[in-house]
Image (cartoon, rainbow, N blue to C red):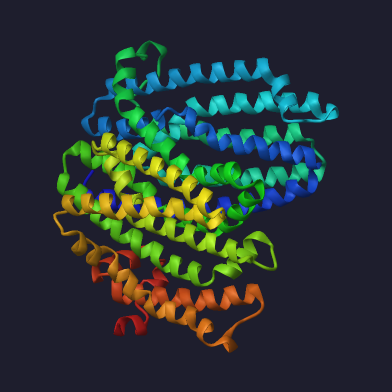
Length: 522
């Protein structure tokens, strides 16, 4: 596979990532509304609690999912199918053991767990069954989850996304019918779990069909392969765990140092930043298998080019969206929270977190994904642990001194700025043989300049109050359209190179491939 083919895969995979993300947001909102209205409050609360636990299941991944993706990319290049069979069989049957242990533990302690959650006596029996079924499904998600990782390692992320997107749409349709038919919590949970696991089974068919030489057998389980795989997976696991700490620390600090009400203020302010993060990381998520493939082939010049191009495109995607969100933050918060008035502290928290995610998109998201797959996992682990430790210490210190929510958010922002711009950025610059300022000038600065007209348009109502639009939805529509189209035109004509414009144009439907007169003149 040539580097040009790798780049084509990155773009097709990124587009499918955005489609899956958009469908996921829509399905999530519709499902939330359906179940919120249909289920009794205790049932809905138990549903929400269990699915929140699902997000922490990655801590039991032990980094093997990431390792599977990396080893598939590397060993496929070399044609070492027997060793790949050993690696995947070892991971699969290890996960099966974890699944059995988890299911047995929860089944034995189900009564105590349900009681600890404060479930009423009337629902105790049903919720106990729901709990056991749910954690059995989480256990199965580990061994079955290896198959989407195999497809990602094959750089067939678009295939995974198409399967998941189809399953999400089907799940929404079936749950809508279940609500209409008056199904109970257990039946609805079984439906949701089926459509959560079904994509993994379908992925298994496509993944193994593409590698007929690979066999998954218990006899291929190898302790030596387990030790070898853990040599990478432990670093990936610690890096993933530190990312979770970075994302969840603030809530824990607020709850311990201030109050639960402070957590609510923080969560309200974090909504826009979280959506921003979802929309800015989709391209970066496609870089990991590409980097593993290039590292396995020994194409170091292509890796350096991928690092520089990835950083540049991350800035091109994130900067216009950041400018729009920063200027239109208040109406966006009103839409996402449903509140008619946004408190000053909530707005301040949102601005700090938005800047946190934006800076991370520029300095962390590309470099960490590529370096993790190209032999730098140990150094990344230490950087991640350092950032997490400083984040935690600084957030606690600032919370105790200033006793407000904004200070905790600032405690997360400062380490990200330091580790990103003072440590990761110079590292990237050295690897691409550029001075840090030159790297900034070539990757980030063009996007900043292109977004100046958009910032002037979006900032006009702050200077001229008569331009303020009271209706929230109308303001988002008009200002978002004006700012977004201006950024799009400026980025297209001023930031992208002719070859990049041609490459993007070739992906448009045939009637739209020809340049409009305005863009031709530009």
